Length: 378
Image (cartoon, rainbow, N blue to C red; front, side):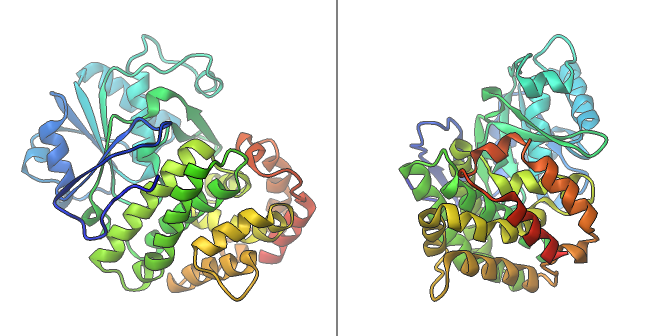
């Protein structure tokens, strides 16, 4: 089922979600932060990132209590949860990029627990999250899809990424306002757009794919083909709206399919080296595309067709699209340009197979081939 989020950004549009697996109510609305502040359960608390600008908030939002979460590192999430326990809000309106949305989701779930659990217990599901706070999510980037998924990426203090999964992490309401993404520069637009691209492509070849998720992912890739290149090099309101819709569709597909090898490989490049998540995912796609095409050619072909690739093999066409996005943002599509060494590649590939998300990839991926492809990118 393809969701009808208009690229012309109407004043208000309720998006009817008919994905049986996803309970989030999605709205598309200009002035999303003010609308949420007026309609969320009282008392409402705004959770924002450290780089949020005052211009992103309207009159109603400015009268709400604000909590700043600097990152989705575990200590920041615990501090936010402690404040929510103290304030006992009726709702949280989280406004920001993926880190802010992820942190708010977990903090709202922690606030409903009597004691502070260990992170490992949350990851393993030993202690289930309990959310009694109404949760609104408003993305200010176009890529993560966190507003419609039931997991959050949390970073340990030593730079390891872990994924927390729980039904309590589904938001009650997600609100898309593409105008909030207008402040993204070319690099951030490229990074978040490549994250959305990764979500869509990986959903298509995930072991968990189904016809409904294929339609969502293919629709996302069509929007990405039409809007991401210009959103990076010469954005208009139409391109911002198209990418917000693409991120939503890719996130909904991912919320059933889960990510695969490119995401599993990417985490150390972000957690240890600080490469933006979406850029790391894009670089990992470059290494994984051809090996995946050999074991799942029809899946890669479906993704390439949706991305409007013609005249070359599916994997090469998708790779060329990824490289073009890096180029438009003034970035190199080589790991060496981000300070990656061959030794780091060896460590990453050795650890990747243990990542839970790696198990969602089609069977038969040749890790020696992936390692060689990564080393050629250094």
